[in-house]
Image 1 (cartoon, rainbow, N blue to C red):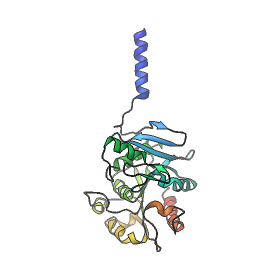
Image 2: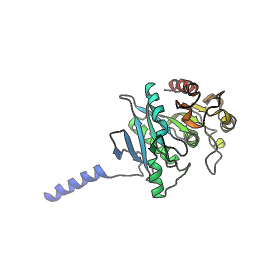
Image 3: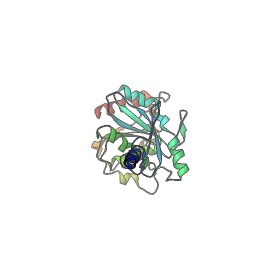
Image 4: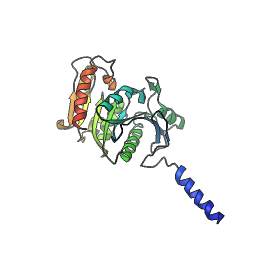
Length: 254
């Protein structure tokens, strides 16, 4: 009898505590009171994310930061999206450092493990976060928001991942090594919001030139603007115009 009790206890313990970083269905491995969570990418990098979840609103917006930054890029943007009725999650990718006082913990973990640190490697983090949201929101497709290099990743992922229904790309470019992004994303066939600073308009137009125009909403500022999703920060001159365009697009594809 003691043997069977021990066997049952062992099986129960393993089912509760076993972690499988290679799983295609990422699960929370830690949740803090401040709404910061952690889950694994397929290659065992531990991803840190902040959740901005509304009650009874399935999370469908994934926010990805620019080079040198962290999930802190979206502290205020996510809250504004909440007021529009969107539940969001902002992640740290393995390429980045910190912003707004928030350190990129995913990058620290990837560096410690010496695992594929870089812009292209961060694609694994974004895909893992898409899987995580998709699994907890009742299999609803994702609105993927990217900034700078992660805007390029967003367009790339949006062209091949059926769990993504909409892309918003702030200042995408040919930032990814050993690939022609313009050629790679020509098959993109989902609604895509594109914007940048004024001086980036021409290279951005070239980047998206092979995508069918019916899928593109391109906001071209007639003022200086700024690189990346900082365009939405209150400190950015002209942020109201960026927000008006972004808000209209987001509500259209909610």
